[in-house]
Image 1 (tube, rainbow, N blue to C red):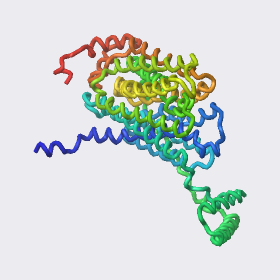
Image 2 (cartoon, one colour):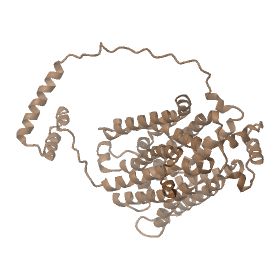
Image 3 (cartoon, helix red, strand yellow):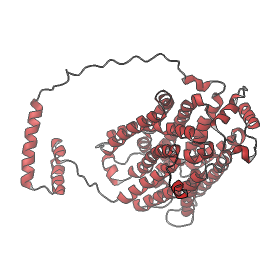
Image 4 (cartoon, rainbow, N blue to C red):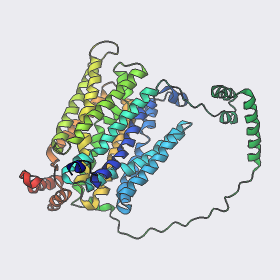
Length: 484
C-alpha cells in the first residue's frame, strides 16, 4: 500500500501548475534567442548592420504590444476564465513565432514579434494569477515559481541553440522559382546547384513554372462575391469593473505591484539577457563562439540557481529576499560600472575583464534567486480576489513597458558609455530596496483570503496606513501550529 501511495497520481493543482509553467518556457526561449540571433551573420545579411537604436527597436518590438495586451488580459481572464485566457494568448504567440521563423525580410520578422508580443501579454500574467489561486498557501510559492523555472530552461535552450548553430549556414536555400520570379537569375542558378537538381530537370521545372504564371495572370478572381459579411454581435451591457482596481481598498496594492514589476525590469536583467553577446564582447570576448558560449553559461547559471529557489520558495521570506537581493544586485552593478569608469577593463589582458564576466553571472544568479522568484508571486497574491486578474495584468503591463525601455536604450547606452548603463540599473535597484524596506509587508505562508481580509480591515488612505494595519493585524508572528 505504501508503494502504491508513493506512485499515486499527483494532485490536480500540481499538474495544472506544471502545464501553465510551460508558457514560461516559450517566453524564455524567445528571450534567449533574440539577442544572439540579431548578431548572427545570416541575420545581418538581409538586415545589414543596424545602428544601436535600430537594433534596440528590432529586439524591443515585442514589448509594447505585450504591454498593451497585458493591460486587457485581466478583463479577458475575468470574462472567459483563466484557462481560456492562457490558451488564447498561447495561440496568438504561436502565430507570431511562425511568422518570425518564416520571415523573408525584416518587416515580416518585426510583424512576427509584434504578434508574438500580443500573445505573451495575454497569457504570461494570467498563468501566474491562475497558479496563485489554485495553490494551497504552503505550496503557493514553489508552484507559482514554476513559470520562472521554465523561463530559465527556455533561456538555456535558446542560448545554446544559437551557440550550436552560429557557424552553420542555412540548410534551406531560397526557392529558385521565387528567385527567378524576382529576376535574380544568378542566385536562382546557385540555389539549383546547391539543391543538386540536374540541368534537364531544371528546364522542365522552369517550363512548367512559366506556363503556370501565364495561366494565373489570365485567371479570373473568384469567390470574393460569395463571402458573406457576418454582423458583429453587440456587446452585452455589463457593469464595467475595470476601474475597481482604483478603489480605495485596491489602489495601494495596485500601485505597489506596478512599481515592483516595473522596477524588476529596470534592474537591467533583460538588458543582460537580450544583449549578453554585446556585454561579453565589450568585456573582451571577440569571436561569436566565445560570446555565445559565455551567454549560454549565463543561462545555465540562471537555470541552476532557479531550481533550489523554486524548491525553497516558500521557505524564504518575500520581503527579505527582495530587499537583500536588490542591494546585492546594486553592489554588483556599481562594481562593474566602477571598473569600466576607472578604465580597469582591458580587452586582451588584465583581470578586470574576468571580474566583469563573473560579476554578470553573479548578478544573474542573485536576480534568479530573489526578484525573479518573489516579485511576480507577490504582485499577484496581494491583490483582492475581485480585481486580482486585472491588477496583475496591469502590473505585468508595467513590466513590459519597462522591459521595452531597457531593450530599446541598452544598446545606445553601451555604445555611448561603457559604464552608464550599469550605474543606471544599480541606482534603480538601490532605490527599490529602500522603498521595500519602508512599504513591503511579508505574505509568506498566508492564504489569499487572510491577505485580503487584512487589507479590507483598513480604511486608511495611502499605502503606508494600509500596510501598517496589515502588519499589525495579520503578519505578526504566530505559533507554528496555527501557520500550518
